[in-house]
Image: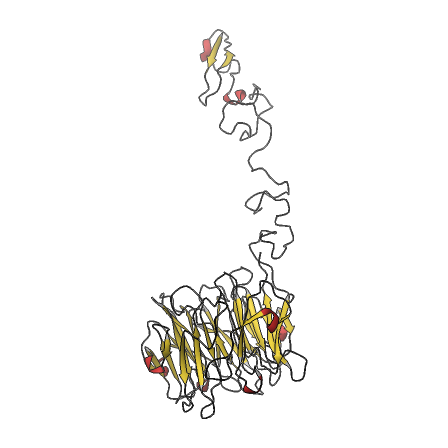
Length: 516
């Protein structure tokens, strides 16, 4: 008997035969073997016999359309590039040079070994930008995209430049790759300030003061009460070729009789832009002001919208914002109080009050006293999801220096670094490089400007350290680390005595951290 069976999965009808032994097709053990559905998928073989089609999925017929079995085991995807690895383990199955066993090639734009990480910086690729003799270039440095082209620029202050008058100069370097060069030949000169000497003593990126999504710049001059007036000049980005320090968008005057120094830093973000924090540690026990609003023309200290006042302790020697440390979505403020060996933390929203009424304190007993002279937010070093804090003590000649890392929501001490010898001044200046290799842990960069040495530690970090324990350590010389700044993978280290001449030239040391 012959019949026609239409596949329930589709495809062409198949012809088959029923063979009966006198009992019709309802026979049991005496019935001849009936063809199975799988027999039509493997060329008609009898799967009731010993040879059974074990292929669970037919590569040529994944939808069971009736196409003969290829005989391959198609439970896995094809290795398209033939490198022996399949997705997702192979992050680019179109390129045989990309696989988990490949060697990572830095800065080629791809993840060669599929580990999701950038290359680790190994101490190579350092460039030096040199100024003029005895100009103290590098006393102040800053990094940010001041031109608006998406690449980080470097600001270098040379407060003793321009001869005997020492009016100072401020340079903008916008190179795309780090290399040795002179500031005269490779950077743009913003010129001296108007009415104040020593321009470039302080250079700071306060963030976006005007709310136009451009990086702005604050430049400070010398200020010696009774001897020389000072000025803080605000230059709103973008900086263009004809930008001049003598024609700032806004400025704050420090008269001769004003017995204070101002240490500026970016303040909490507002709807119209960032505020500007101004620390005045020599004003009584220390005063910190927050200025907000329009940045045009002369601004005065009595325009402050928030004022924190300390009874003692030199509060405001370091000030810092730019991070939400308690997870409420508002920027918080840190105020260094070296006279009490700690830093006060103020949670947003902010209102005027006493420094002593801080919401939290970060501090430890230090060798020389004075913890709180420098502050930084390195990112999440320990990987717990909270922003960590660096607090340092290193100001006076002879200091070895101390830097303490406070981690987690409870901001407990999780690591510390000490200078190796007297006058190391480890942590004289601090900055944040964040997570340079993409493993979820921020790194810590520290410099000891007394010895001109830099160290890099890859996170997570715990315990006690010196520069000798760094994952990467480089001796740079030239008082490297007197100032330091970083942004978008570029690090600038101020070195006021970088050159070997007598008197020496100043300058800055630059490096770019590797990327994929």
